[in-house]
Image 1: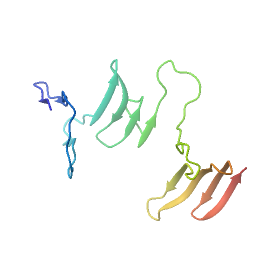
Image 2 (image 1 turned 30 degrees about the vertical axis):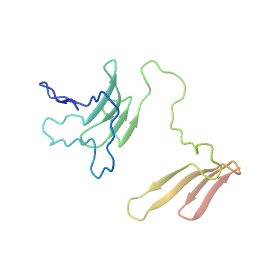
Image 3 (image 1 turned 120 degrees about the horizontal axis):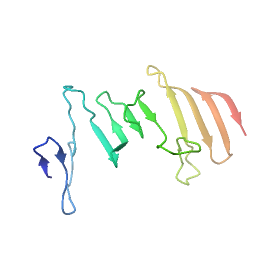
Length: 133
């Protein structure tokens, strides 16, 4: 571990494989106190933010000022469609899904894909709302 450099950056740079054994605490922990509101994590390529976590916990992917909990933006000059992909990893017994939760009663809405029957399913709690086959 490189420690903290004179300009205030934390450096993590082992020069060999690290073995930690049984870990009961975080290996990397960032604890920001709110002064000057810096970003907690900002991974950049050529000075452009590719993955950012701001001090309010919002995540930006290709976005340096996320306005939502997760904010995706296309790269500069990128064309075509943009989206999020959820895969079952080739396992037919696993159905990819998105669960919508109001925060008080557990999942209230589910969008899922039945990889066996090739069905797109929209449901609410345990009630089928729409099935596209």
